[in-house]
Image (cartoon, rainbow, N blue to C red; front, side, top):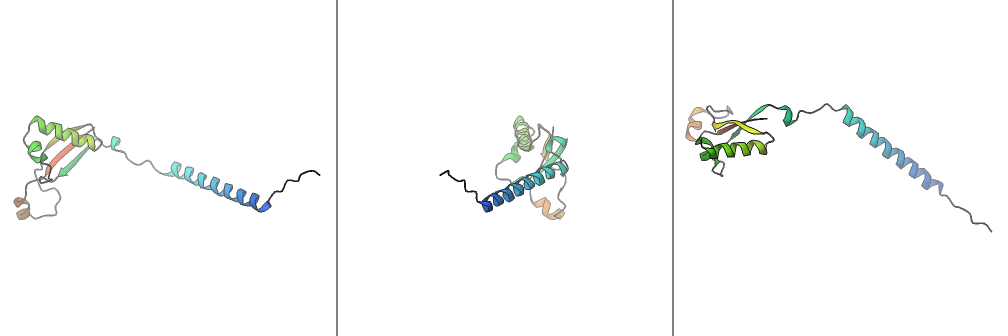
Length: 119
């Protein structure tokens, strides 16, 4: 007697449906990557200014406002950590930059530090 091959038609149908579902999801994922606009990257940004509180707890305000070589090293390291190549300028922010506090309150606290980074 010759052996017979038993094929479960339900299993074959389920596998076909699962495979077509997977391929359609893969197609939608590929299409979404093509259709999405290119988001700006940090490499496209030329300059950016970061404002850091003077009382950040790390003591970098003394270094950044003294005009010493220590300030240049810290500012460059900050910019590199943010994806830029170097610090353009750094020091105390000249004016209250957020616009969220009144003048009397801003005079009581130390002025924040501003670092302008460039590529």
